[in-house]
Image (cartoon, rainbow, N blue to C red):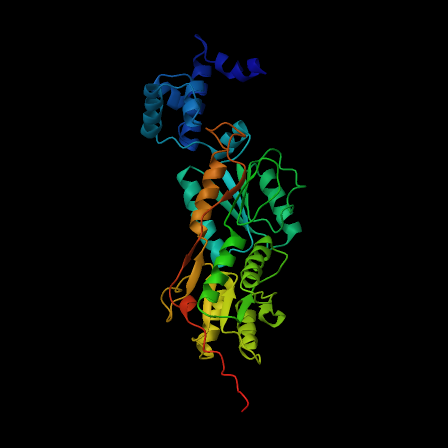
Length: 375
C-alpha cells in the first residue's frame, strides 16, 4: 500500500517532464479547491508533518518555540483543519452531545446556553437534544450521539439508571441536575433535599402552618428530594403533612395555576406556597396576582426572569443553572485531550445553592382566628 501511495511521485522523476507537470498541477489544483494542508503548514514552519499534527491536536513533547512556529504558519496560510479527518484520526469528533428534559424549560435552556459557551471556549461544539423525560428516547439519543463519535456526552437523566445499559464505547459522560449511574461518570447536582428543607423552614419562621407544596412528577429524583426536605421541615415543627396541601403532578404553568386556586379555596386555605421548580413558579406568580392574593407567601425552587422585578419580588432558592453547567463542562473537559483519559472527576459534585430573600418569602402569616369562649 505504501508503494502504491508513492507511485504518482515516480512519474516526476528526472527525465519525465510530462509526469512532473501533471503531478505539480494536480497538487496545486487540490490546494486551490481545498485550501492549504497540514503538510503545507509543516513545510512553512520547517518541521515534520508529525510535529505539526502534535501541535494541531495539543499533543505533548513539543517545545514552545516549535509550537509557536507551527501556529504562526497556520495563521499565515489561513489553515483550517478538516473536522472529519481529525475525527477519524482521534477516534472522536470535537462535538459534545447534550441531552436535557426540554429546551423549552427555562432552567435547561439556561443550562444549555452556558454549556455551549463554555465548550465553545475550549474548542468544542454542542449537539443539543431533548429527552422529554422519556427513558427510551433518552437512551436512543445517547446511543446516537456515541455513534456520531461525540467526544463526550452531558445528560440530565430521567432516572439514575436510564442510560446505564447503553453501549457508550468508552465515551465520557457527565450527568447534570440529577445523579446518574455509569461507571466513571460525574454527577453535577445541587442539594435538593437540603435546600427544600431550608425553604420550608423559612416560611415556617414567618408564622406559616398551612404551607402548600406544588411539584411535578415524583418519578424524578429531584422532585422526590425536594418533597423530602419539605416533609422533614414540617415534621421538625410538629406539623402533620396535609394531603390537601401537597399537589403533585403539576405538569406545566397552567396546571400550577389551577392548583393554586384549589389550595386557596380550601376550608383551611394555604397561607404560603413552596413551588418546587421555576417552571411551575411561572404559573404560581401570575395566579396569585390574578386572584388578588399577593398576601400569600411564596418561595420558588429556582430563579427565573422577572422574579426580582414583580411586586412583591419572589424569594427563590438559587440553584444556578449557570454554575451547574460551568461545573459540568469543566468536569467533562477534564476527561478529554490534552488531559489523560479516565483521570477526570467522578462521583457526585455538589454545586452550592442559596436562598435569596426578596419579599414573597418574608410575608408573615395572617393572625390565627380568635377562639370563641363560653361564659
